[in-house]
Length: 177
Image (cartoon, rainbow, N blue to C red):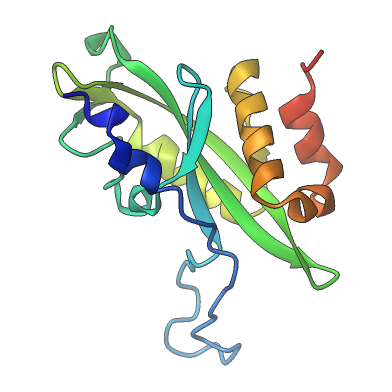
């Protein structure tokens, strides 16, 4: 059975983390400077299936896509891997309204038959950090994947999409005909 086509995977399309619980409350004491992941969500884009879904397990490398897979740092060792984009999406507020502030995509391939995959852990950590800092980094993604992501973000919350910066719209829809 192909784990990635399991119906349970489709059920993991929960919502975004959009409310931040700042444990430091601005006091600057214990816990100050600790990375707060309350407002970041991992979205998987599957260009082969033409879909995107949220899987919060990716925050700890325990998503449905990653389970039972040994990841290698060399892409050539997984020649038949299925392409996924793990996209870190950060929600912030401006004018008291939420918007997609940071969006950064990381390549990942998975071959369920040999239970191996490719991903660069340093890239994933760095891209998550950039997303948290409000950067838009999707240049590595193919046009089809960008379109899937744009459609997903719009359908998830059109108001947040419309309130997002023009840079995000241009980055995801620039090659659209």
